[in-house]
Length: 624
Image (cartoon, rainbow, N blue to C red):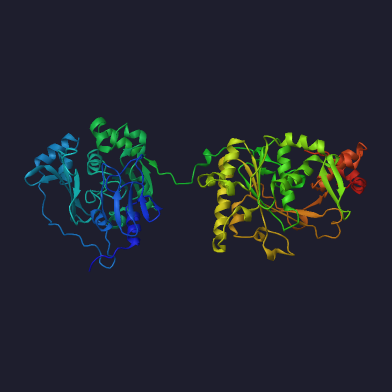
């Protein structure tokens, strides 16, 4: 029965070989060619066409090409699941260790005793062909490998080759003495060098660093050892075998020989020849535990005072008291029902960041840039610089005094930025990637030293037409935003709409529209909604809640939510404490409420006793 090509077989081969791959159109590209190994400069030169199964290496020094079936055959990868790979049975007879083999191994620093222990010999009548017999744990010879001892590059076709159709296993299995510590090397001469130095359990892989077809035949045997020490080749500041053995044996304790203990040499055999047995044993003795990815010692974490971490205060006293502000590296999410003022609160925090002398960047997907600025202008300028006018229906509206506009221009220059919503439409095809939102955030943070980013809002920031892809796109976008915040050490405020079913209920983490992963990923969740309490909503129109607070843990829900008032004149939002602080000082100074409205920035707080004394009378006189 002939073989029928399947894409799954290609993927299975790549996995079995431990190869790093990537998809590019119909091609599956391998980071390194299985045949020549490639190098750091020549990566992804080998590929397999997933439609046809044809493979090719583009390196001139290699140039291997053919069909996947040939590739699988060359690396002993079985293709027919219903017909397990059948390996040739080799004759089981005593091997005579020939003198040419002994003499060659001596040139490699390996003793005659070790040669005899491992049954290293030469082919009959071919003294230049070294033979390495592979015995399994039961002492049965299942494979053999050959090495041309007088190999001439450019003349001979290959230096080493494996006996055709024999089972790939680890070399040296039979000679291992117990199941304490297993040293795995890349080449047979390296495992012999370890054994000659006094290592009890030294083996080598059969087909070099890229071949892992041996794993299925040796897995249970390897799993019996207490720990594995990887003694691969040291090439290009990297130890071979380590990554793949770690993947293949995730449940094992794995150590790796330190790069410094190679003493500038490539492998164990080179160390033995130049520095002797003691250096080989020292390298194994000093082997270090393979680091677990994404894990580091607590001792490596900085010891810091959380309250002293750099942050951007929101300008709302009670909110800052609860969350501390938006810390650099954090992503805060602000949600609120449509039309209830969440964008206004976002703009207020943008204003507060500017007042802290922080450069800011805003993305406003729903508002044109002039609308965003007009709101911000009013918040910054204050009532003294705002002129009230009336439209044809005698309804009031507010504009900035002409002399204040120039001052604001100077105030914004070099520190306040906004995304150009037309950029994607006007950019050339090759420039489109550079003007995309996430790329823009990264560039402004690096180029303009922006430390605060306002993204209003999540839905407009994601361009997805297929609703099935929406949740995944939201998740990936927020992941990337979170990654940018950490990498660039900036504070990001992301605004998102709540779900429609949130109507009439208090907003919480589950209220945010889209996948629940959004609130799981961010550090702080802030809610902004109308104040439905009839006893207080004549003075305080809205409430701010905190439903997630990763750093300080303080949550504000229900009655603990912050009461805030809103000024239609200055578009400012202020909580009771902000009002008390400002009004109390103005009241004691007999300062008018109008003058108070122009005060901005942060002020020293009164004591609670002082606040209590003046609040009742001051609050009656004060309106934003």
